[in-house]
Image 1 (cartoon, helix red, strand yellow):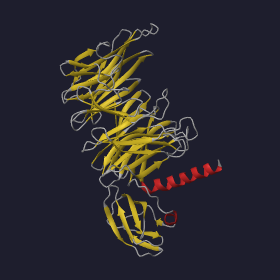
Image 2 (cartoon, rainbow, N blue to C red):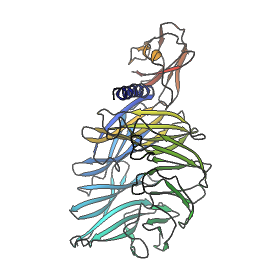
Image 3 (cartoon, rainbow, N blue to C red):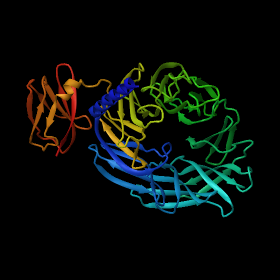
Image 4 (cartoon, rainbow, N blue to C red):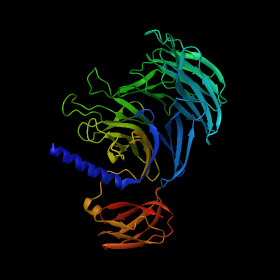
Length: 525
């Protein structure tokens, strides 16, 4: 046990050293969320502005929040949407149109068994353009499912209606589809026949060529066009349900399953062209493997990631969950696989994948000390050609709580912006970070510990002192990868350089010896 504790302590030391070598800044934003799995934020960029978009809890319900940061981590603005016409609401879905308008789909709880649907359209400045609702004074509940814009004239909404709550075990659930124009006027509504069309409710809506694709239970696909014309495929051949639908470059559909590591390609009628099942190490009466993210490269290759349980179930060597990233070609042939397992019997789960500069970047979370412990932010950088791991980044939040990455953006210079949920003050809040890169090697402890940089922060025009042996070059690099100052060092124990023509902000100071490079963060005021 003492040996195990020592190993874990060393892992923590290495992790902290590694994280500090790549982290430029980290900002927490209070959102007061309670759902660790479905209320996660996403990240987008505009030039050198980082936007974080997601849900925020308030005393009167849930809202959509957009926080903008500049490349130095300063908060530029915050804007909240959804304050109007709702109370005790949950934000179910949101979409942006090409005119920078925001559409919100909300469920407002009226009574214990009764809810209504509220639709809202906002301008980017937070001005409400219109609000509409779907409700019934009778004892009926309307529950929204998803929203998708069809074109610049209309949008679809999926929902389901329930009634007869007070008849034991006789609650009736019917799946609905609505079409609205962009002025909030309902064009039509359709109730689906549970026997011949959709039973229970449709999974999240997918729209292509102004047609709604609704995958229901029992291998069914129902397609509805803007005129409410319906075509049905009662037996697509899909197995294990539908988790995510994605359009491919050759106009077919990539579909991942629920609870299995299965991916399928179908034609636009939903008929399976090929399917690949990675398999499972779990007993037949257990499930838990899950594809969480999918992406396709310009050559048509397919990358999937998520969680996949390890082998030796029920033994001391059994792994709780691993991050399994797999690459297929466009016909489903396996090219490579990469399995990430941290520590002993830890839970490791991927939530997001993106491709950049020849690498697949995977974001997620990983338990820090084993089953039942808190989880850390995790980024994996995987060579997209070979599947070899090129970099790892881990981050433990401020309160040793559950921290999980849900969205990534990689810049041209390999710096990386990320966001997700971090447990702070009893709730899940956003922690957004900027990394200089995700690398595999860890700086030498002797070299790292013997280098001092001062003063820090420093004012433009002042002298920066660098104490350390064997240093031959330096570079000052901005957060977007631009070298703003560089020069020679002469191997002396103490070097000084003048900071000149460097704007206020956060920078990376790269110090080189003949064999290695050390990075320090400096702040110029």
